[in-house]
Image 1 (cartoon, rainbow, N blue to C red):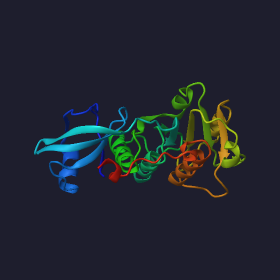
Image 2 (cartoon, rainbow, N blue to C red):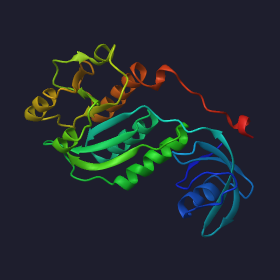
Image 3 (cartoon, rainbow, N blue to C red):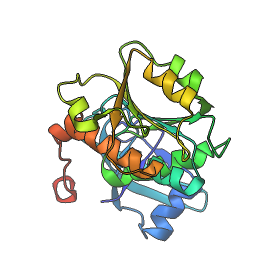
Image 4 (cartoon, rainbow, N blue to C red):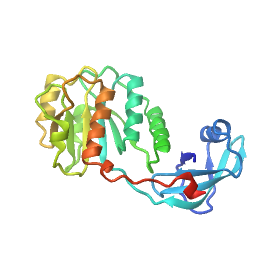
Length: 251
């Protein structure tokens, strides 16, 4: 069954107007007509079965009928990623959403090849990935900030998994073994790696845990996917999967 993220509150019999783009997707791409059923979520009120009540050139109206799943949160996991080329950055954001990241923080480093990012487009990519993967929220994409600003803003109690391509770090699975499963951030550097000064500054942080992702040099997108996968399997919600209802269960 088609899933759609909406901004509106979800309550029984509410009338939710959606804009031209999602309306086009429902009616032109997926060819739904009045009376069709779909699933909607907003990151606050769980997942609801809804009916496509009205179709017009200006948009569509959805009417929630009943809640299918109560709201659940993803682990408090952030991905802190240096800006890389657009296509790879879009892949990273998409896969981070699929892997259950709660936030993606974009950072500027000494060796960053780009100085800006289209946050609106990245948010749209994260939204689509969330719709397709069954999660009940959409990760926040935070506009680029200097690395020093992001690191100084990490709140007390959050650990930082520093994926150190320079070596001299414990293998990631071993490093996370026995670690606490509270708030974490995963730090991935730019295509040229962190500068020696940046690397030294990160390793000096009391809350940083340097880890190795193996003997090979990984591209940023591969490193992000690998690091997030190991974290989820070790400390995250892969340890106790919650399976959502099938379309048959909500028909």
